[in-house]
Length: 317
Image 1 (cartoon, rainbow, N blue to C red):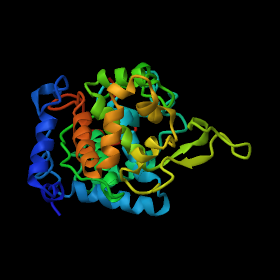
Image 2: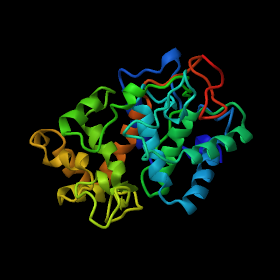
Image 3: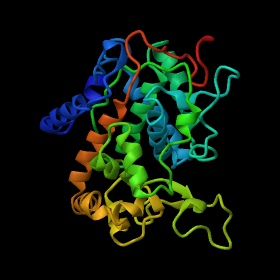
């Protein structure tokens, strides 16, 4: 199936809304003067979407956590100097210091071998065409859809960065951040309270180490023991996450503060209630916020490069 047909929305009105919201992501215009487009690979690599989807489908057979892990990689990439694939780079000292070992990523961010497999498959299908940054964006959408969540037209055309930013990566949103700190970190990349509540909804599937939960680990658990983020429907992308918040059963402190913080009543709490009561509203806003996040300072045009190996820049800079 061609990429253009794979990205089609169930409702043309919703697609138009999402594309309009993407264009309204002020402050994050692509560099190089080029705009991202859902049809970017239609001529140069029409099988791109299907290739990415096939690799993820195969990977999740042996590792059901992969969809949640892949969407997290896209989050942690975009929040550090934009969606440029910098998180994927390994150490190549002295020029490149990896972002993988900062506290928010170390022994936590995962799925890198699956990204390698996707890149290898794409290099075989259309060599030198699809960027690693776009792989993360495609993988995030496909992962959500495979888990029962919304679909959206992924905007493409990002190029890969040739540097990392460890200092910025150390300031990624944290499981223990209070609400005002979370709001500030989201505002710094032009994401508002609705985006915050919607994007935190990705915690509706996947797992987390018990050391990061509100309850912490039991006496019989090691700090790395895994707990379901959503203990009601742990493998399904739905709005049960918000009902967990309403019942005070969010696994992560940074989730529960969106309802429990004293300032939440006038900011995030009404949005939590809204999404808890209307899954389609959550899906619509999640898709719009993902498009908006994916438009954070991408490299386009002649900026950056198309890495042949997502873990290495193509040449020394």
